[in-house]
Every structure is written in C-alpha cells, then in structure tokens.
Image: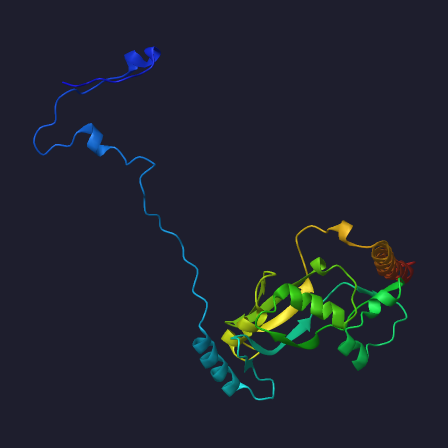
Amino acid sequence: ADCRYTCHPQCHSLIQLDCRRPGPGQLSPESTLAPPCSQNVTKTVEEKPEPPTVEEIKKKIEKYNAKVTNCLLMKLNDDGTYTGFIKVHLKLRRPVTVPAGIRPQSIYDALKEVNLADMTDKRTSFYLPLDAIKQLHISSTTTVSEVIQGLLKKFMVVDNPQKFALFKEMRKDGQVLFQKLPLTEYPLYLRLLAGPDTDVLSFVLKENETGEVEWDAFSIPELQNFLMILDKEEKDKIQQVQRKYEKFKQRLQQTLKEAGGKPG
C-alpha cells in the first residue's frame, strides 16, 4: 500500500493510518478532501435591488399625482430625476441656537442665498414651536443630510447638523412607529413609494439620540444655557417639595390643635 506521508517526529506516535487500497466503487481519501482554496467556489451574495427604471418611475409618479388632492405634484425631468414636496414635522425638545438680533429672511435673501447667520457672532437660544411643520421642495437626488441642513438654514439655526436626525413616522395597528433614516437616504423616493397620504408616512426632525451626549458638539453659550435651564428646574423642584411638606406640616399642626385637651 502507498502510505507515504510527512509529519513532525513528535506527532508520529499519535497518527494511525488505514493503508488498505480502496475497492471498486469506494472513494480514496484524496477524493473526499475539500477542494483547495485556489479553486473557484460559488458563494451566495445578497444582491441589492435594482434601481427602478425611468419608465417605472414615470408610472409611479402618475399613480402618485392621481391621489394628490392639492397642487403639490411630482414632476419628472428629462434626465430621469424628479422633483416634489415633502412636509417635515419639527419635534425638538431642546432649545436651538440662532443669531441674535437678525431680521427675518427676505425674498431677496432667499434668491441671493444670503446667509444671515454670518452677519453677526452674537447667539441666542430659544425653543421652536412644538409640532411646527415646514414644507420643502426637493429633488429625487436630495439626501437626508441635505434635508436636515436645508431645514436648519431656513430657521437660521447655527447648531451642528449632527445634533439632529430625520425620522420617518409610520402608523401600524394603532401604533406610531419611528425609524431613523440614514444620511444617504432619499426622502422624496420614500414619499413616492408611500403615496401622498401623511397618515401612511410622514417625516419628523428630532434630536439625534445616540445614547450618549456629545458635549464637544455644543458651543460655550449653549452649555451655559443648559446650566441655566438645569438651575431653574432644580429651583422649581425644590419649591415643589417645600410646598408639599409645608402643607403636610400645616395639616399635622391643625390635627394636633383640634385634638388638644381631648383624651388620647
């Protein structure tokens, strides 16, 4: 039998060989080995869905526009891109930073793309109205990152865009679900797929909750403003506790007074 092999001397006593020749129909040990790594092996790769064709986009836009009850239609361009409108709900719980003493943006400023925030270094903080809605006219190539930057510019917010995130809000089985969108997502395409009904899909701008506060992203005036808010909340809480126990103390004194002179 051909049982030639090579091994380390210390391993010689640990190896046992079956040197019988394979009979008819039997496989030799070599034939049961896995193919070497140099051979081509087919691997299953998860394929990404193919982007829709221009014709498919055209049909989707026609179907979308047929459901629109206002003038906010989508329009297909000659190059295959399309434009349309999205509404974004602003649900911000923390104050935002804006330039101090700046007049509202005029039509001239918007057309000339004048950045009013660059006209002063003074900053102030305030709370945006809860559930404020902003309508944006965007393209199919506009990303989530560009939508966030556009919203901040319209409200003249000078905070770092990384502090904010765009979510899609969906309603399913009576529940409201939020999903954070990646910065490279295209909101107008999501709007096209969902249709114009905002009860099916809507967009929400919220704070970018990463689980840990990135204090380095805040400016000195913002941090000072947070300290002022915390001090105010602390004083309010102390006053609430003091009022609670003051009432309790008054009730005890009143009970003792009424019980005065009576046998225990």
